[in-house]
Image 1 (cartoon, each protein chain N blue to C red):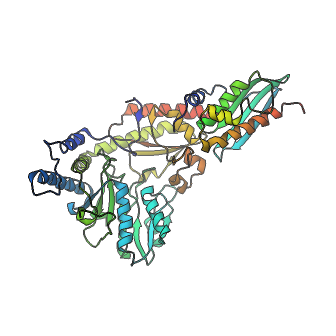
Image 2 (image 1 turned 180 degrees about the horizontal axis):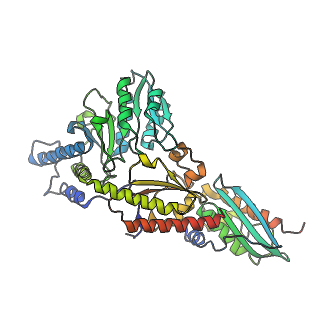
Image 3 (image 1 turned 180 degrees about the vertical axis):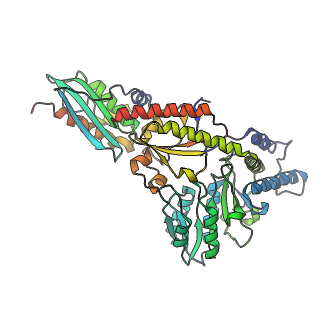
Length: 121
Length: 387
């Protein structure tokens, strides 16, 4: 399979792979290893702003690249229960093949699970 | 050409320079370019002489007679000719075929097509090492079985089946023909077409440093009939019509002769490299060797890596290491290897496997580089997955 330059770059660096600790850290995960796609996000939220984000992923290169991009671009933004960019836009940005677009929904589910737990009820 | 390490010899091999030179001699005005069927003039006679020589070279390499060699475009065509040819000719004798779940698609797909046409096919399940035990064949034979098709060397895991024992069972049963896909065998282990008691055997040139686009079906001279699949010229005893491509078969003949002439030390060298590769990868932990190591050719190593996703593993080494995954990649989404699934591996481990094919030009330095690259990639992906 061939990957776009952007996908290749984020897959190769995956700079924000890892976990966070601390009182303001919220965690969410989605998918399963058995099904071949699992993503977890840790987000540190204070005063309604995402201060840091990390991810773990057992997934294909597209999923790893998008998860890495999401963590990078979410930092400094207002915490809302939504990805920094919509799934269709991310799909286009990373040239994700149609057969794989469902995997971006796993990223969205994991992200929303993490951020929503840190939002005021 | 890039400088990545090539460990995909089970997919294909480079053409030996001596083979390429011999082929080139058959293409131009100065060479044996004539139609080997046009024996009324010396151009055709010269080509026919080379085709006969190639036939003898191929036959000598696999324990067959020259008159048992039928040229094809490759092992896939040979498999199709064997399976549909037997089914067509012997259809009044029965409508049952016996094969294995770990066969190449070039056997499985023709069998599935015959199922669509009303045939019954039994797919034997190997043991966890990938071995089909001869007594499984004996137990699965039915009164109306007309064909048993079992491969010699598995293309994903390198396991060698006991064809001689299966051949003896088929002979005892009577009436059943034994076909063997030996595309991966030449130059890797002993092939004895007559001694194995095989009726039909598929061969490929490009897995043995010969050219792509040519292969052969060995058809035992006694009591084996096929319904041809193509017509128009009567070449190859009427079993495979079409002008014989002199340069291709000359290449295949010489490649088989060179394979036969290789000293035993070459197999020992490759076996030592494979063990070096396995020991290096095993040090990672969470690695599983697929296929019975004691019953496999030295040229193949198939390893599953726990904690990594298959497509990412392949992508992580891409550009630096040329290997295969057993996963079917017919679409954007990879499917787990059906061969490894048949061995009992779960879907995730079946997908996160790499097939390393070693060959004539593989060096110790290649192996060390491969080990380093894979360890690096797997360790990184495990960090990303948290596993």
